[in-house]
Amino acid sequence: MAKKILIVDDDVYICDALKMYLEKEGYEIRCVNDGAEAITAFRAYEPDLVLLDIMLPKKDGWQVCREIREMSSQPVIMITAKGEVFDKVLGLELGADDFIVKPFDMKEVSARVKAVLRRSHTRDQGSDGEAIKLDNLEISLQKYELKLNGKSVDIPPKELELLYFLVSNYNRVFTRDQLLDKVWGFDYLGDSRTVDVHVKRLREKLEGVSDKWFLKTVWGVGYKFEVTG
Image (cartoon, rainbow, N blue to C red; front, top):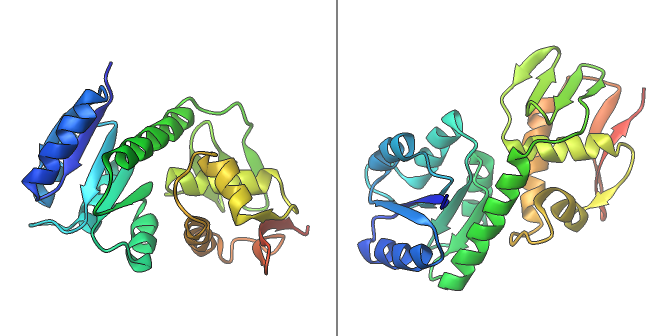
């Protein structure tokens, strides 16, 4: 079956251009033009991926992304005319999977869509990895579940994958580029700030949970999950 993509942009010309190009690539496309309609369409259409503009009437892209993440882990690629670091950081904190900056080339859109869908498909296949248990910490990739102090914690899929990888390789230091390669995939088209954003969010969740392990920055190199007890 063709993958379904929901395009959310108030610029009808951009919607039509994306729809025409991506349908030629073999995708099934639905377009909506405001944030409120996007939420309704997401529930009804159940897309495999969302292309989401930031500047939208009724509800902006930030709010739409936030609401999508409350009900689904389906990939979201945000579209921005600004290309500012702040936009990317905020979008990643809300759970966006990638960014496209206007004006964009259709081939770039296609490449990013394929890369994000490929990563999503790999994630959905599950993992043979066993659950990891440490002091007050339990991670399961099969269930996509994080437990801290015995309680389940809401966590975006990519944050969980990054934590699982670091914990699986505890006391080893990884550069940002290595983590992009191992967790996001060799074809990831983002930049190393993506790792920093996800580590920041993980630290907020893990703060004060244990004094026997830490998510540490190795200055000038990267990050490691250090186990001391």
